[in-house]
Length: 176
Image (cartoon, rainbow, N blue to C red):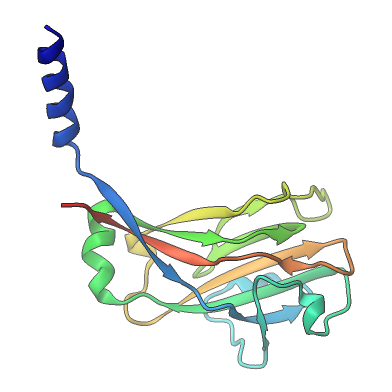
């Protein structure tokens, strides 16, 4: 009887597809603009005058010496060869590092969610907690630029922004 139960469990496990995730690291160099304007979330916004800074370090390390709002933007090109894996699972996942102290996340202008709460009802994000968001296959612009935007608020004049990495996106893949 015990052998029969073990065989049934084994057959059930084998019938499920095993899935792992392939990581694609996003460079630390992100475009940055101090201040706050919701138009910075829009995919079509022209960010050509923004400066590059390293996401994963406080913006103060790059000469921005204020508390308050700041925006990050990243131009992500997702190659078509990843489409079958993403289509199979229906999504890819973006992993963000820690933010100080609250942030909202956008993909091609669509709000993904937030960590903490921005003013006027400011609530700090949990320390040491990275966030991940799912991007559906239909939202991805293949072989062209997708815009990841992050709106950050920090009340700390010494440690603002995306303060820890790594930053990457996951693509699910089947194990054979």
